[in-house]
Length: 248
Image (cartoon, rainbow, N blue to C red; front, side, top):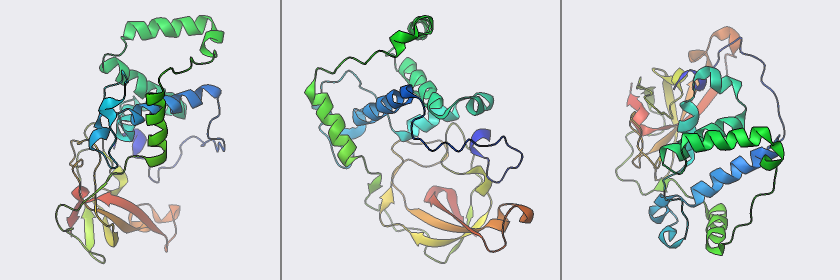
């Protein structure tokens, strides 16, 4: 992963703020709501598990959007910007960029609206207009209850079994990756083979996307970090897609 997603065991970083509230500022609830609605109206849901009749929902949102797309937007930020921005500001940046890329709004329109809100903050705090289409509300509510499972039938037997020693491949992170960078090249033991296969909804350049087995791997902490920063008997577990694993 890129710098901001490859911090495993690094020392000397600025203190982390131990926020206990899910939402610190009122506007953060709106960002979460927008992301949730985008997932609930994503055009891939007609082939998801469970299936939704998304084609019959009268929404103007016709794009493909998942948690992976949200992460991809955050990873696209410059590392300095990533560390400077608050958690939901990263979400806002990724969502805004997506809407521009998909043609729902232009950069000029977004800049104009931003300037308008900065000039008069009461407009930004005004209540959102009530939705007038119950079919959209129903779809969002159903999605919140049922979700969208990544689990799929296993297309072929898993390559590895419990007890196998495996090595994490040194794959290129490309634009987006689900592999923690500090695990590359490290050896681990398979402690669980999850039932079925799991998709990542959209393909990434480093090999995941299509349904494949996922393994729970056990790493000795001293094989990942300096002995002075961890404990000798500490075991670190991580769930890893099969595409990232090779036999020792």
